[in-house]
Amino acid sequence: MAQDPIILNAFWEGTANTLDPPTTQISLFADACSAQAITNERDLLQGNGPFKIAFNGCGVTHGMLGTLFASGLREEAAQVASYVDKLMQRGRPVVLNVIGLSRGGVAAIFLFQALEHADPEVLSINGLLFDPVPGDQVRSGFPWTGKNAKDVSNCAALRRVLAIYPHEPLPWISFHAPVLVAYPRQCQVEEDVWLGCHQGALFRTSRSSRNRMTEASNLSCRRIMDFCDAVGIKLERVDSVFGWTPSARDCLDLCQQILKAKPYVTRRELHDGVFLGGCSSTPSRTIVRRSCGKYLNKYHETLEARFASGADGHRGGSWVPNANKDSTDEAGLPRYMLGIDTS
Image (cartoon, rainbow, N blue to C red; front, side):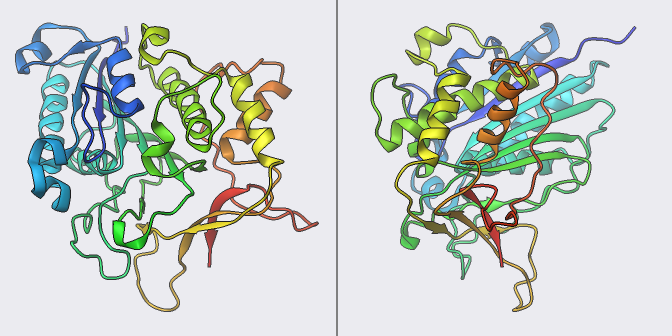
């Protein structure tokens, strides 16, 4: 008889962010996650899970060195990897779910690299990277904190990844270009471009406010809830933790409204883990907001398909990432308003 897996959920906040008081939705999801918080390794040997662990931003835990050079992230990733190793020694399958924002997304990348040795027959990893930002300048790479945070293709246990990239750029001097990661061939990956600007797309939800930040945050909340549902992260006290959570219908309406709003375009540079050559013939990719599109983004396309099937927005079944590519139809209409250009 197959044994139920032991589930470990890990959450990482962005650089300057605290879990308590909560800075972004990452803190709120960590709080709402129904699991036993790990206090020491003995917890892993005695309980059946699910377990959870959450980290403040590296600028909070490691001060200026954390802010400038992401100090502490590899050590935290190694800590979680050691917990996973302990769980695997119990002779049961293990599921590791990881959610990370900004530098917390880079911590998730380091964790995937630290678990390259893991047997995919024993360990399954699901990851949500929300605007993973190494903190390096695009052209020079200075200060090189993300030099080795672009490739997780050797992590055979990595099964599913949702990577979300807000489209609004920050000034180059802020060193906030995100990274597109190279994944294992067998990994199911959905890279989606989003409303908003970096962690401004992960603040508090609101039923009544309609500014750009809350629109993006509302969409993010429902998308992350869908992810949690799909990978087995159980949530509790959601209404009291978040105050209000948008429905799938709310998000579909929002996507349709923004698609019809006054158009404007943006371009956001990035670090590309797939095209690493650096020569003139190497393709480059850019996060963009186009003036029009058939869908706002991949999540909008997924919501339209759900409601068209009569599912009333309920996900149902296993999550299959939307792997559709950016394209243009015969009339010249892009598939997505928010997408990734290759040139």
